[in-house]
Image (cartoon, helix red, strand yellow):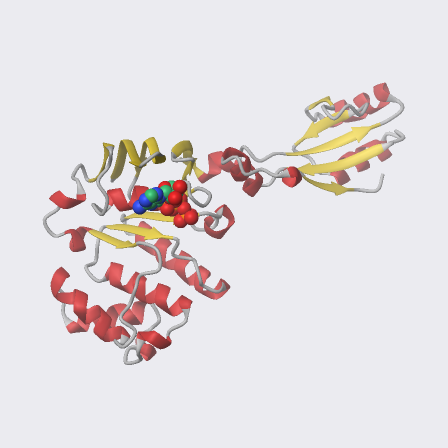
Length: 307
Ligand SMILES: Nc1ncnc2c1ncn2[C@@H]1O[C@H](COP(=O)(O)OP(=O)(O)OP(=O)(O)O)[C@@H](O)[C@H]1O
């Protein structure tokens, strides 16, 4: 289990991480999300003992990274695009790390196979695409068969097939009871991969929950208006739908959890004349953007439906 407790880091006058607390449980994939500059990398660097916190702590199974006897066997971490020696082959790159984690040449080959690079094992890394580098960085983190995986923006540079492959691999590891923490600045990139989300902005925690709870914050409702308000009410009541007076200043109602087609059909069946019928959708990504203060004018996606 990863535990971040009142963690703070200041660089001069910049508070990169500000009194941040959250936990990451094993057996699931957790997305560590926030816009550029939110403090994700700084948090992960403190977790991995690369930067000293100004105050607070970040621990793995109750211990600071520096206090873990064989960290390469416990935590596999890939921060940002790792720098590789361009003249080295993929296999030689892993061989450099093998003694540190105490694994054999055979293990290096197995891991290259697992990340889909076995055919490129003897090729120089200098000629690798960004996606291939990401796979090699992941291979490096997996070398010591760690129980905890910490990956900074691992989907960066992967094509859709690569993202799907990464998703399956991470889910497989979580399924084995490992702890998997994956950072990203776009929710949609990891939406199908993560079970839990930890969202930060400006160095502070803004939301932590299972993804399903975040999804429940996304809403779907229909705006409907009729010159005959009581007839419309009767039609809506007839279907047992929950509705409230419209907040948009339009004379009409907001009906929760239904589609415009359903409301239109109900009105038509009841012979009620409609002057407005609009589907309003707040997507999960919009919930994320508004939580992190990135919501722009177009936060609410509106689909006009002819009435
Ligand atoms: N070594 C440093 N010296 C000074 N400021 C820093 C340093 N490292 C990070 N910062 C600042 O701390 C803040 C958080 O940066 P950080 O890289 O942790 O964000 P991030 O969430 O990882 O962003 P991104 O998605 O862009 O990688 C930023 O304002 C950044 O400029």
